[in-house]
Image 1 (cartoon, rainbow, N blue to C red):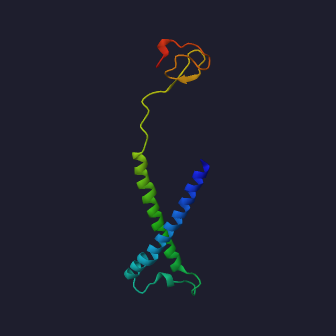
Image 2: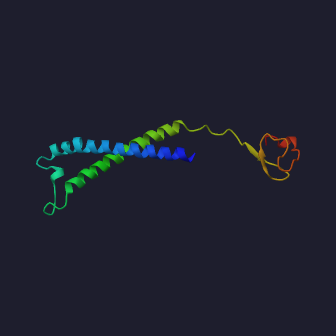
Length: 129
């Protein structure tokens, strides 16, 4: 069972990396130019502080990328997977499936007529109780 979990984890990491690249591309090629339209004469990539040593624009791009990745993961994982898991929930059990032997107090199947632990014949009244 463990190799399947490792494969699932590997698939998740690969898909996550590819998803990160897609979101980064969307932010760099779509969102950042749209923000530049709203704020003319301000290019995030070239915006620097302290004489060009601190690249604040690249930090802004990374923060925007993180926001969109977090939003997409929230929508996909929490909302969609939550809805799928809610639909796939197993039906509730209709009643108990075990009972206690009145003689040795061991747990036995509800339909048992003889205790598997003490081999005592169970009274008919305790069957299904």
